Length: 463
Image (cartoon, rainbow, N blue to C red; front, side, top):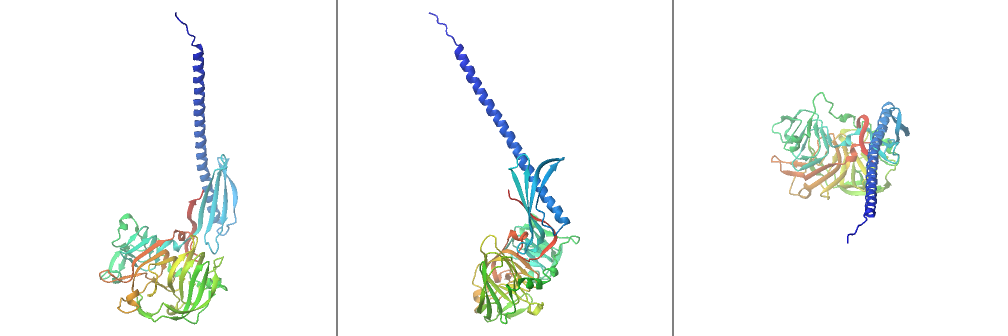
C-alpha cells in the first residue's frame, strides 16, 4: 500500500526555527555592532578628554606667563570646538611653598558625551633645579673604570670618562687641557669628554659650542646664605659651638644634635692642593637635645663644622656655614655614617659652605648616602690617605664601596678614589656608584638652587 505523508508541519517548524536563529544572530550582530560603535565613541571621548585636559594645562601656562606670581586661579572652564561645547576642564593649583619650591598643576579633562570618563594630567611648574644633575662641577673631573654613574652629568671644564653611564654627559667646552692629575703626562689638549667609556659611541657625550649657553655659574649659587640663617631662627639655628662643631643624627621625623668636644688624633691627607694634618673623626660629644623636623621645612642652619648621619623621614635641608665667608675658616660637612630615607617621600639636602668630606675612619662599608650634596665653595671628596703600614691608615685607607643616591654639586674637584701611575687604587673606594634620585629633577630639597626661566619640568598622566 502506498502511503502519502504530509510534510507541511515539518516545513513550518523548520522555517520557524530558522527564522528564530536568524533573528538571534541578527540581534547578536546588531548588538555587537552597537557595542563596537559605543566602544569606538568611548575611545574617541577618552582621547578627546585627554586633549581637553592638555588645553587646561596650556591655559595655566598662558596665565602664569602673564601673571607669574598668581597661582590662585583654580577654575572649571568649557572647552569649545567650532563654537560648540564638547567638554570642560577643571584646573587645580598647589602653589609653591618652602617644602616644595615648584607648583603642581592638575588638569582634569571631561568629554560632554561621556562625562564619567575623565583624563587627568599633572605637571610640575617652576625653575629647573640644579639637583637635576647626578653630578655637576665647576672643574674638570675623572671617572675611573670602577665608577658607575646613573643620571645627567655636567662639567664646566671637561670630563675623562673611563667608567659606565646610562645618561647624557655634557662639557661646557669642545676641548680642554687634561692635566697629570687626571692621567695626562704631560698636560695635553683633549675633547670636552673623552676616555675608555663606550657610551660616547651611543651619543651620550655632548660638547657645547661657543655659541651655546652651557656654563653653570657657580658664583650665583646661594649667594645669600644669611637669608637661610634668618629663616632657620629661632628653632633650628645653632650658633658657633665654641668647640669642634656639631653632630646631627637623624632619627626618623626628628634629629638629635650634639656638641663635639674632642676629635681623634689628626691624620695626614692630600686635599688635591696640599698635604693637611687634620682630624675629621669624632672622639667625645655632649648632647644638646632632640628636635622634631619642621613641618614647614625650615632650614637647619649650623654656624660651624657639622657631622651628619642617620635615617630621615621627611623633607629637610641642613646648612653648615660661618658668616661672613672666610676661605680659611669656612664650614664643612663630614659624612659620619650611612644616611638613609625612612620612606619614599623623604628627601635631604646637605649644603656645605666649603667641603663635604668622607673621613678616614668610618665603619660603614659599603657607605650609603641618600641626599643631595652641595659644596658651595669647595669639594665633595675623600682625601688621599696614604696606605701606610700603621694605624689607622692600614685599616681605613682603602675601602670597598660607596653608594650615592641623589645628586652631587661640587664647585671644586671631586673624587672618592685615588690611583697610582698604573691606575691601581691606592686610597679611597674600590667601587663608586652614583645613582640619580629622579625626584630631584623637579622637586629639589627645600631652598636648593634653581636656574633658568619658569616652565613645565615634569608631565604625567595620573588617570
